[in-house]
Image (cartoon, rainbow, N blue to C red; front, side, top):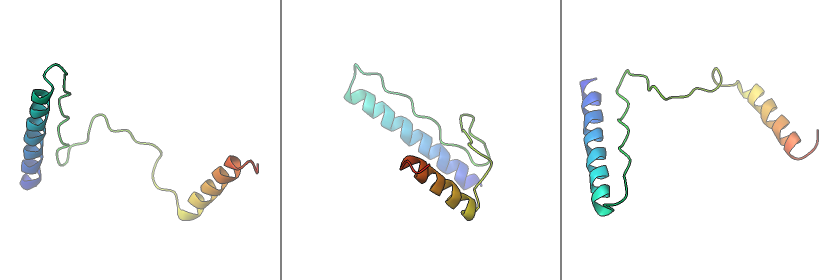
Length: 75
């Protein structure tokens, strides 16, 4: 687990260096500060979840066929 945290720290430092180098290339343009890499065991604050989980294959097939029928005007 310590290795993953260390790799996340290295990623953040390299991202910051990349951002600084990009800012040096275009001095008048503001460069966005990179977002930190998610730490192991930590849930990202801005993460969105849609739905409650995966659909079973038969329900997914039904959903897909319904969307296809509506798209092609067969409904």
